[in-house]
Length: 230
Image (cartoon, rainbow, N blue to C red):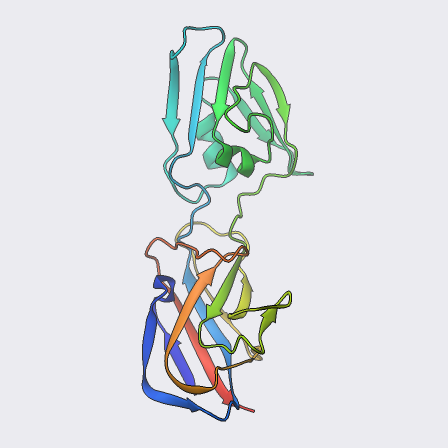
């Protein structure tokens, strides 16, 4: 039997029209398909970029509040170029080179520095004029996988790294732009055993690799589950 759940990004339970009788524990569930509209961000509220004249009066600085959203390198580069900074990324190794103009100091919030792979400036340290090289490749694809959790999975027989888990499937999504729509179908899903007893609802949550629920900012994620007997 197939069950299609709409708008699972809300993390709400969906009541089933017909109760599933799994008192004998012989039923399994798998993810047959998922359709998602990309609505997650890699820059959240509170990220800022500031600059000032080196040695200038305290408080004489300009600050840009970066609007939350899903950014790629070129978009963020345009935001950070004020007043005369230069930001480039090596296409071979993915490391950035940040050049701060003479007589200028800049301050990047930690979230921006992590996207850029740059440790210099972490913790609210102003960067003087000069050239800075990334410590690791830029990483704007902070949501390269979605982890689909189903609360009605039997955690007795489903574990991740030895710990009980409700993880149903992990989906690699790659790099996308905001608003992109993608459907993934599985001809041979990986089936997980359902909880024993009567199941009256399904609840799906979409999480990241740390277990934190992903905010899709209202854009839809739909999933189809298949229940089989073994």
